[in-house]
Amino acid sequence: MSGHNKWSSIKHKKGALDAKRGKLFTRVIKEIIVAARQGGGDIDGNARLRTAIAAAKAANMPKANWETAIKKGTGEIEGVTIEECVYEGYGPGGCAVIVETATDNRNRTTAELRHMFVRHGGNMGEVGSVAWMFNRKGLVVIENPTVDEDTVMNAVLDAGADDVISSEDMIEVYCNPSDLENVKNALTAADITFTSFKLTMVPQNTVELDESKAKQAIDLMDSLENHDDVQNTYSNFDISEEILNKLA
Image (cartoon, rainbow, N blue to C red):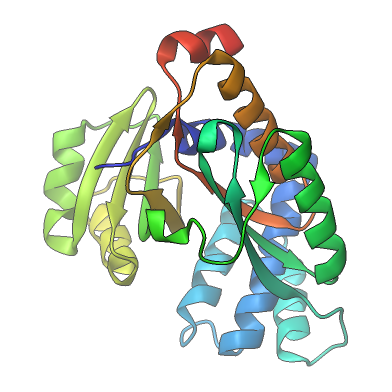
């Protein structure tokens, strides 16, 4: 797949740390609230909510927590108003950056993220300034797989998957967003256990960074990821294995 880049792989490795920090719970709850507000509280009839609930269960979130989040989203119980905001900009070396947020204070979030961009050698752009460089995709991640890439490809090809990529200790399956449910079901039918699934943004092309710019870019993305209002981050930077090992 064109545009497969290092940041997506680095983010997967951060997942366990996010869970330990409690960051994962915060993200999932916000996603449930937004999904329920936009599409209603019926899990069977709201695909986005269904995906969010699956993420909550995968994170071992107590049922009471996500049920309360649904009620906040539908207005059954009072809660803060969560608004989705997407920010775009450029990072070190001209790499493109997209930040998806869920916030109860747009002005505060905008100011804080703008400061992060500038502090780490980037700048925030206008809406649409870099989104055209990415494609929206469905993604299923298989960590520590017990099967090989060819087995996974054979299982999901007829379900709508358009790429399967192996990297280190995981296999990533990409598809059109509308085929995500079919791909999940195909893996389940083939007794292939997957770790997570979600919608993501995949860069059409990548930007290679030297060592100094690579460190700046990773610091920027880490800073954004650690912000309480940030749900997802995407970038099209690429880093050679040699430089990545040095930074590690």
